[in-house]
Image 1 (tube, helix red, strand yellow):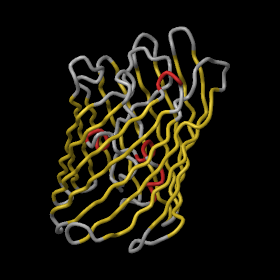
Image 2: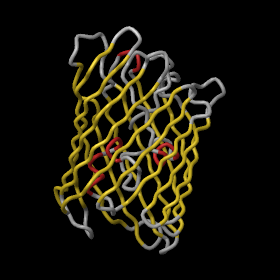
Image 3: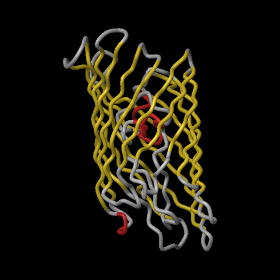
Image 4: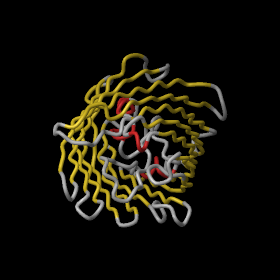
Amino acid sequence: MGGVQAQNGSPELSFPTLDPQALAMGGTQLTSISGSHPLYGNTAATIQTMAPAKLSTSYYGQSDFDYYAVSGFWRFNPRNAVSVGWRQYLRGSGNNDSALDVGYARQLSGDYSLSKLSVGITGRYARLERADENADALAVDLSMMWSRPVRFWGDHSMLRLGAKVANLGGYIDDTEYDLPIEASLGGSIDSFFSDVHEVSLSAEVGYHFTPDAVRGFEAAFGVEYNLMQLIQLRAGYHYGELKYYYPSYASVGAGLRLLHIRVDFAYLFTEKDSPLDNTYSISFGLDF
């Protein structure tokens, strides 16, 4: 689920969740089809979105850290989509991470009126830069998404389930570092009460396997209210087992959709001594 890494001077390669829609909803991103960066959340979602192509850029501010990303995808036919993205996480004192991601998604079954199953794979070249050492890594993320119309609230609802295993791979160079391997599972439901009002609920759980120092559990819950597919209001909560690597926080945010333009913002609320104090993210994007 991509926890928010917060440990100052951490030696490990890390890319926090920076999508404002995901952050505002507690960090839930596995089942979103309208976020700014599905490549970093769940590549399989790109084939189930309404827009045939998206381009997004985001900035994430955390204490003295600066994090930038740009990504986009193109669904070149009803069952196949490709994605590409670049990220750079500047952590000061020579501690910087950057990555180039390339993704592919395919819909295996279903159509727009029935259940759909899609899978995604993302390949990543990552560069870790530290004051005393540099290292390069190759990794793969595997993801899936299943969706189906259901009867729940309102006029009709859509149920989605997602799963992901992230950072399978290793460093090219001889180094003491380990890639942060993580597995996560999530679900969401979008309920339309009318053409004007929509409410979405999301929940996710994840577990970090490596490195040993950050092994642990995290969970997230989020809610979004969508007015006329124009204005979105969001809130959420994220629980992290390790305070200085993926800490707990509450979050709020908002979004605006105007013609083909998207603008999203998120802000985190934490304890005063948390490394995530005063963390925020903003994104600008185009839907084609």
